[in-house]
Image 1 (tube, rainbow, N blue to C red):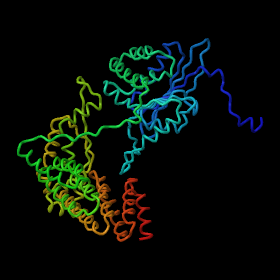
Image 2: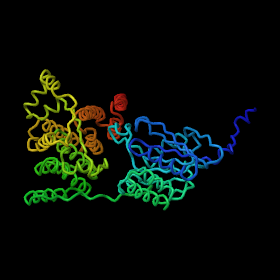
Image 3: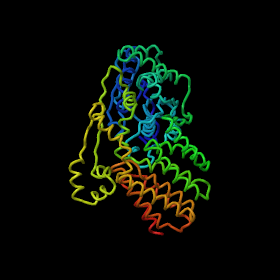
Image 4: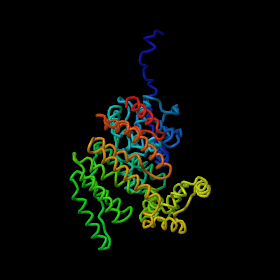
Length: 512
């Protein structure tokens, strides 16, 4: 055989021409196994020989489970089927999540001359996306653009939302989309019969199937879907408090136009976090920023956003309040598809450190305790251990409800004193810089984004903030100080351990 003969394209084996090859990528809980069973049973009921296999992944950590179905018209001799899909050899690819569509394309399972790609556009974030301190969410738009090029025919919609709205799961709407695509040589009735034959959740599955079928067969796609802005909820309460709220709202509306919308949202956030007096404190600080804003309004707008986040910090009181708020149990039940006849247990995992315990003490007392290593070590031994607490039980719920109701105590605590000291230093530094370098002052305000959460997450954020501010000190007076401050902040948000920030700071030190 010559080299040219070895490199020439291989001719397809005519004996394989009647085999339809379908692959499904789905993570746990998305019903990939159910969808596979429906497809296999439908094919066999329609006179086809079919074989289904699967290779399990580990949720989003190492990839989705790959389900694979091959089918062919039954003949005198049983066909020989493959156990796994091969690159460039898949007729239909179904993915239950947008990033799985991207992975299917990268693995070569989707080809423009052959593959019909059906994918849900919703996102189930991967662990790698969740662990990034900043915005680690991958772009769905890039995947959609690649799919339009890579697939022979691309069908996409939020099939998860369609399923939920019809009281079912995504496997049913994806099955409907498969039917609506016309990629398989079976009538709609064959699909519906497969659902009925399963005998489980038939009515809900048929509703969701119909919704998926209509979405796919209509040719509609939500690739360019837009979401209407949501209006903030109204405020209700006693007349005295309502009058106080209206007075604060009028103050917020007198701020520069560039900041009014964010300031109103920020005001609601801090009032909900504490009380009306705390909202007045928020506006007092914001009005001082506005009075010194001699630029284009960005300084006031960024202050409105990040000051609200800084004042509504996460502490034990806020966490307990969030876990016992009205409607939380109903939201969890809806997410778990829990019916009225089912009993649902909700278990919280709490892991308080000594720092969190001491932060709830009166400010002066807490400061003394925090400076005593032996006392902190003792508190750590007593409290720093994981606890699983069921908030569906009355004693645990009441304990957390009591903690969540300690808002009147919050302003006396060490944690509050520390947060207020940080806010004064942060705002003061930005205002000091505003007269010299407006853009740098705006970047300093945006650095508050680094501090979030509580416990270890909060401690890491504070450490990164301090290091970024040290870098900004080295940049003072430079024409490109604002640009480098932004780079330092973005580097701090890249990874949890701060390696990118280390490199950025090293660069700054090399020329500062």
